Structures are given as structure tokens and as C-alpha cells.
Image (cartoon, rainbow, N blue to C red; front, side, top):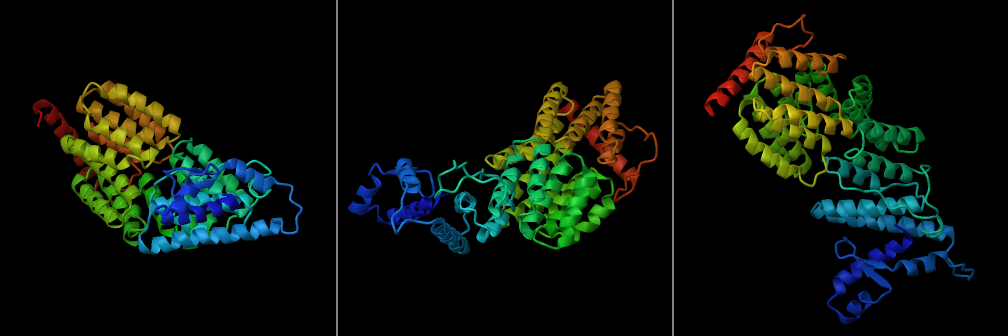
Amino acid sequence: MSLLDAFDLDLATRAAGLTHQAPARRLTERPILTENPYALWPYHLHGAIRSALTEADDHTDDRWTPADWHQAATRALAALGGQWAATTALTPSRILLVACLRQGLRLARDHRLTDLGWLTDAAFVYTDDSVWEPLTPPTVPAGTSGGVPDPALDTPADTLAELLTAITRRQHEHRQRTADRLTAVLDTGLLPAELTEMALYYRAKAYKDLSQNDAARAGMQQVADTGGRLALKACRGLANLARLNGDFPAALAAVPALGWKGRHHRVLGDIHWSQADTTQAVTAFETGRAEAEQHGAVGERAMTQVRLALALSFADPARAGDELALAHQLLNGLDQRSNTLLAQVVALIKDAGTDSVPGRAQGLHTGIEAAGLPFLHRFVELTLAFHHAVRSEEQNLAATISRLGELTATGDFAYFTDIAHFMAALPLPEPSTTRWTRSEDDVRSAWRGLVQARQEHLRTGN
């Protein structure tokens, strides 16, 4: 956003309130102005007018100096933040938040502002609910924006723009690319402490998705130790990492301290479904979904709904289909790639025992690889283990268990290999390192019971 965009904002505000008056209507219809009826502030000076004003070789006494441009940009940024804060205090608006961030980031970047001000708070609000509208400010050629060229990552505003872009773009880029971009941001040392915490947290999430769990654990612990805004989310990350490592009692012990900010019900539901405790898992996810609705958190509501369908997909394929349909509806427009792929896994699980599953699983592996989300390969293989156990396909099951063993050789998700043995009523080849919250025999019996129930369902259609 150049300084002229600040004029545009004032123009748009005035025009929006005066469009019923003939002078304002005539002004907005003139060719010096352009209009985007779908934008929050729709009226803008024509690009040719902008260039003439900002690039003119002006040597008059009242010309604008670089200091004038900087001061005006600072005032414009403050005014933009003031509009966001005033509106948010009355009725929070996601559309307004994103519009203010897009223009504010460009304004701060193009004019190399060092005080990020309200942009820090807005960045945390933007990332809080895992809804990922694009924020990338457009590239500005050198000589525009009051003579200020488009900079590299050498100001706090540059690094904040890149931070939010990397977090958002991870829905469309390989997670290794995300980790690399966030490392580059951190290496600048230009972010204030709170935003450094954000970069560390999302890099740790990327490491977890890449199955680099030692690095993920170190990053989450660093963020948790700060006690800052993301500390509870980092504690949730540590609880999830404990579960992935097969330490269910440690994960369960962390839940009471998480609260809403740490998404406690989602963590609890993941613990229960992993032990084939469908009833408690469904209760946790339903409670988490209701809590998300109370907070107006549409991203969390969708994530919890996918997991509700996941818990039901093993035990109740008919209801799972209904819950999965709702999950797809809630995911629409949220750009949550990981959860969209997980929903495809859920569709496979509910259809386990039918002929289409192996071919669809192979296609899903391809999509997961392209997304750079290797942890989801384990879910697909667990689905195939369930499928082959239901069909009593011993050779295929043995091959699947072998692949699961390779995928979990580091120890993370090793309990999936245990579950595959439980499904088929096979003994474990060696004592398990998994620590369940109930006895291993109970977990074994529960998973075997789900296989037998699916076999009965396929025989009778009930």
C-alpha cells in the first residue's frame, strides 16, 4: 500500500457515505478513479495518476521529502489500525481483519516502517483459527511508493510479511519449503520477540508434519518455556508429540492444563480414538466442536469435525458418512490441506472391506507425497491394515504391517504397528514400548472388536 492508498482509503470512506449525493457520484464515475466493487475499500486512483504523482521530478518548495512520505505512511498505518481496532471492539470481522492486514503489511513494507504496532496483534488474530486467506502484498517496482523500492528481508515489516506468507502458503507448498522459509525469517533476527515465537511455533509444526519430531519437540518446548501467547498451543504440540511417541499417559496428563486455547478436547479425542475407545472419542470431539462454535472458531470446528468422523469411521460407517459430509462442508473455503487429506483417509476407513480401497489408497499416497505431509502415509497404511484384517487377507496384511514398521522405525506412530497386529489378532513380534492409558489386552480386544463388527456389517448390511 503506497501513501496514495491511504488517500484511497479516505476517498472510499467518504464515497461510501456520500454515494447518494450527486457530487460524490460524479466523482466516483470519473476516469481518474477505478473501482473494485468486491474490495473492502473499492475506490482507487488510476495507476497513471499514481505514477505521475509519485515519480514526478518535483523541485518546488512544497515538494514531499522522503521524511514526509515516511511520516505520512506512519499516520496512515495508525489510522488503518484504528479502524480495525474500533470495528473489532464492536463486531469482530474476519473480512475486515484480512483487508487491514493486506493493506497494512504493504504500507509498512513499502515505506520500511520499523514499528509494526497493531500489525502484531492482527497477525496473532489471523493465525489463531487456522483459516488461511492469502495475505501476500503485491511486489512494488523500484521507484514507486514514494520513490521507495521494494525491499528484501531487511526490515521488521519485510519479515512479518514473509512470516505470514510462509504460514499461509504451507497449505500449497511442501512442508520442507515452509520450514526453510521460516528458518530464513528467524535468521534475520528482525522480528520482535512475540513474532519470533510465532515463527518458532509454526516451524515446529512443519517439522512435526515432516516427521522430524526431535526438531519439532525442541521448537515446541522453546515456545512453551516463553510463557507467551502461543505457550498453550506449544504445550498441546508437546502433548501430541508424546502421543505420537506412544506415551499416552503423558499426553493425557497434559490435557487439564490446556483449556480452550490449547484445544484440550481435540487432544483428548485423539488419545481415545487411538485406543479404539470410540464412545469417549466421539464425546470429546463433539464437545470440542460445540466449544469451537461458541467461540466462533470456524477453523477449529472443521478440524474437530474431521476427527469426529475419523473416530466413527472404524466403528459406525453409516454415521461416519454423515459426519464426513458435514466435515467437507465445514472445510470448504478454509484451505486446510492436511485436514482435507485426512478427510480422504476417513472416507477410506469407512469403506474398509470393499474392493475400491486399495486403488484409492495408492492415489491418496501420491497426494500426500506431493503435499509434503509424510505422517499421513501412516494413516493410509493403518487403513489398509484394517481393510485386510476385515477381509482376512493374510499376505496383504503382512505386507502392510511391514510397510508400517518401516514408516514408524523412528518410534513415532509405532503404536500404529501395534494396532495393526491387534486388528488381526496377531501377537506382537516383541514387547511394545507403547504406554496405553489402559491395559494392552483391553486395547487389543477393542481394536479386534471393531474388525469383527465391520465383518458383520459387510455380511448383513447392518
